[in-house]
Length: 356
Image (cartoon, rainbow, N blue to C red; front, side):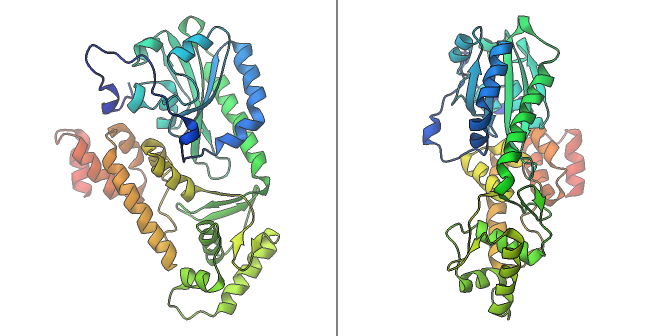
């Protein structure tokens, strides 16, 4: 059973019967799923009603954003807070399909007594992760749940189909969005079209993405080059090239982006700020701009690494850390945290010690 250590810490004699609730209107974190939901709610409502199941869409931290319940499941879902605002992370309610699909980034099912929370031990749940169509970041999950007596072998297929429908809506929304990937190998897309840009041009776009109010020429020059002797004319030429490639979506005085932006590094920062430890670590695909010598981007890399180090110290999930250690960029920090959590007799411990 994939359950984090702290998820089962419930007061003796007082078994948990409902998930914690949060007021979504007070949260600073805004899931990229929210806009997609506006365009596919009717389709998802039809699926839930036709199957007589409860269908839930949750963000990357396992907080439910929206639900639709068939007649037979509505009251049961409300009683356990399987509703908008319900927090279904393993650390909150224990083993469940919604959190498991995020944890392993694969479609998952949890049946009856496999659930930790006794009030849903007569449920069967099918969940599938939702990925950003361009950055491939895990941004949420969709869950289809019903009574165990109505278990269906096609449940996982249905959940996966729903996730794909949402991803299709996301892709359609990004027709006029600038998508930036800076964790690992830098990439840029405008709409769904990849942009063939030089490393310096991608750096300019990332700097502007990090400064939504814009940068004046001297500010952008200093952020990009620091004290290096590079003329302002050179920078202007880079910006002119970008304007031609992007159709003039870079304003001047100050320089700023005039299109919606989707960026893996901004989403990672938002997940960290929201305290979504598992989702943040799942979306850790590499160092931020590892080859950049821009002073500002180097400092931002150090800032992100410091926040990630603090995040690692907050997780007690050994299985998640073992999964993530494949990312060589953060292997030393992951190894150190694992060695703090597992016993010296653990078979992995000796290998980690040798690698360090």
